[in-house]
Amino acid sequence: MRDNLIKHIKTLNNGILYVAINNDYSNQNIRHKSLAVANAVAMGGCDILQYRARNISYHKMLDEAKSIGRVCAENNIPFIINNHIDLALDVQADGVHLSLQDVSVKHTRAILGADKLIGLTVRSVSDAQNIEITTLGMLDYISIANVFATESDQTSLPPIGLKKLANMVEIIKEKAPDLTIVAIGGINEINMLQVLACGVKAVSVIGAISQAQKPAATCKRLKKIILKTLKAKPLNAHGA
Image 1 (tube, helix red, strand yellow):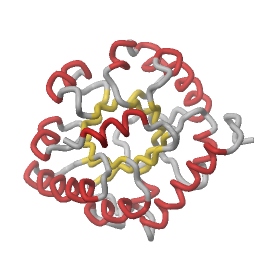
Image 2: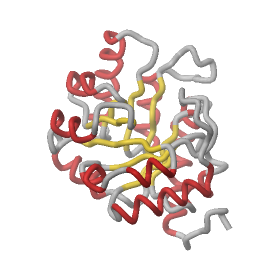
Image 3: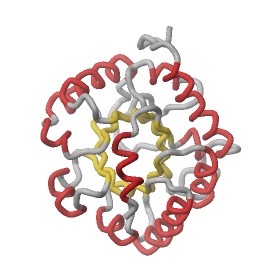
């Protein structure tokens, strides 16, 4: 375990680009395979990388996750596994990302221990209102989804939009002022400024990278937008 890396990420709240790799190759919009994306974003300024395995065997998941984990280790990037706690343990990943329908945060923390990263996705204002402060205290970050419509998500829920995003950010910050909040869902170079204006300091992207002709260059531009915006005067929720 890279303790210094984990400590750094737990206090990092000054502009995070979180890249999730969706390896569902049945999606024709995905231009690049998982390992190629991992290598590209490692060069492009990605701060956290998540592996989202779908529609493949565990053996294939394990093979891909090991390869991506090596890329992350070589580039000092935290490696997160989506949902699969067993896979995270098998590849010695840096953490796990959960949904409210998965194993509880408390149980996951008991399994992984204190030195692993745990993230959780909430999808509605009621989710943000109902999540307990004790649960937030066991998390390293929380994601709010989906801001905009996206093909990368398999839920049937409508996008929350910018107004609800800002509302949920406010609710979560009242409970856990220091917790990193990540916005996710349909975010790209065009709408990222509006998302950042809602009070988040971390943005997760999937399609903006997987569908890009040049993932590394796109990654660099996205990270530049985040850092430049957070250094500037705060915007309102409409980007004005």
